[in-house]
Image (cartoon, rainbow, N blue to C red; front, top):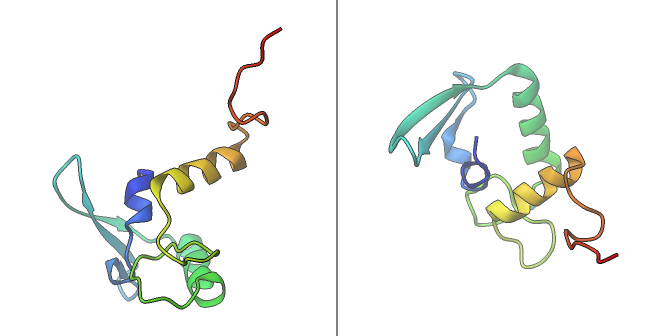
Length: 97
């Protein structure tokens, strides 16, 4: 999934009973269903129940700092890059010698 698709993922797009996530794919311009694997379903449910702040927004992933609003694709990509070690510690700037 693209970071924009993750950021726009809404609570009503998760079908817990059928273990499916349904989302609109921008490039395909159509609805697509993905199986919700057990470990992902458990992690997602745990996040929603224990971490996700109470908010009027329907998007699943919400920032933890005020103002609490849906995460942007840049915030999702940046967090993923830091976790994978692809983010430079100097903020991405090249240093002159």
